[in-house]
Image 1 (cartoon, rainbow, N blue to C red):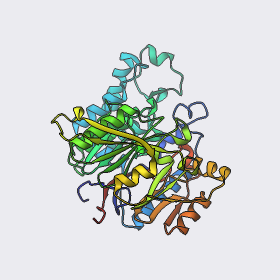
Image 2 (image 1 turned 180 degrees about the horizontal axis):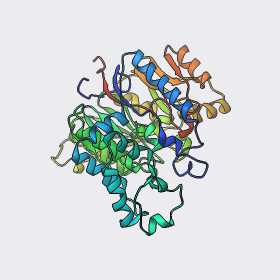
Image 3 (image 1 turned 90 degrees about the vertical axis):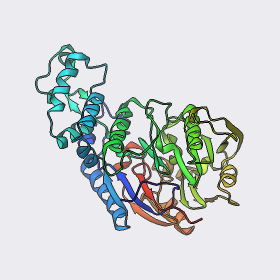
Image 4 (image 1 turned 90 degrees about the horizontal axis):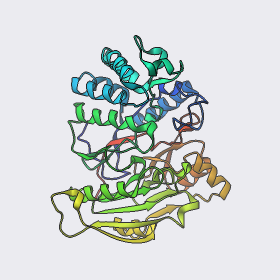
Length: 406
């Protein structure tokens, strides 16, 4: 693998991190799916088939696919990583000290592959040998001692690469907090990554990778809404400026709703100068333009920020990118079809290169509009994968992309 480097959304994709859904999805029931952020109970075998086809479409086009569970199992051979991840798994006030000790004893004795499966798939009340304590006695048989991580499927959110540095993000929903711990351990301890410099940490203000778009080299757009806070956007801006990773950050307010939980649910890049966007927001989306002051101090969290706006998003983005116009591909959707295809992640595409994007096949009208605009669409099934409200971009964390030509 080449050294990690991501400077745009559309440079030729070379290496990506995915997570194939597994036992953690089998933990979903009508009783807990809302808490675990799924809109339904997916057919797991079909979801796996769909994900395998997604990964296959990437590898057929020369993309190296790395899987979270395999990376995690290899990292768990490192004693420091094992200790850190076991401690994070039991750091839960629900279970009390006695049950925590029993859980640590059990997890610590597992082989690395089995431990990786438990950390991702969770550990139920009746699966913990030697368990004891008041918390255990009062739990129901199907209650979780270690909660499963079904949203690990969406590898985009727990980390995002900006240049050659990685932001280990601060996930907003309690059901997802431990995902960043796993991602952080992989990047810190796995030899494929070599402990890259960290741009962000989970202890900071909420910031999720689905809200961060690299519009062009040196230009980021950060959505602020249900998952990412204004404080998170500001903190990221200070850090990318101080480290020379960007010269402009566009802060984009989005509706705090599940259908628009991240910026990439309403807009994604499909060419160096073109986006696909939810038509209902195309005329109203605005951005504040954030740049650094003239002098950058050594402490990146005290960088003086210059904020201007708001301005129409497309206008602000074009100016920041140094182009005449950021093209918006007109999908021509009527309001009902637009709302349906937005809900089905029609605007959440993954660019494999300029004018080449992966999209869910069910969004037929959006896909036809993309093809009419000269975008080659790699259509994949996502009937079961989409039950967690995420499309191809959500399910992928690019690690290496080719730089765009000057």
